[in-house]
Length: 204
Image (cartoon, rainbow, N blue to C red):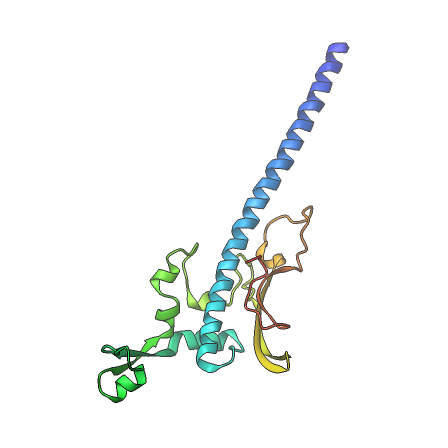
């Protein structure tokens, strides 16, 4: 009887040990999965920001939709002006141009080749596809980022703003978040509709 009781106690102890280990292991696995997913989404938010800043540099405002932004990246170009020749220390570049000592060469450079160059994309965690820019990685139903742009009054002047957001509910699709301290309505975003900020909320 005593031996049977001892065996029963050992079984309970082993079960508890396994449950504790499994719980810790599950949390570590979950943490690694969320960290990886966050890094991928942040990377894409940074790509969107790069595109928006390029759009604003040409148009003086942000794109109002992903469609407008992607068409700009695919089809538009930057005007690049290069000065050819040496400018004497005693002259400004404009004066050197007027005197014929310096000439200016104007060319167009593709927006896509300029901002999403192989050098920029070299450190990316995943392959880059411009047409995939609107869609939240790991979403199971083709969910798109929430995209907003406009202008607000700030410090007595009108300023351009944009915001791109993805909820954790979509980012963590397929992961069990039930017992985790996560607000699935919260998420990752870049920009703000309240301030002229282009920073991300991931602590950069």
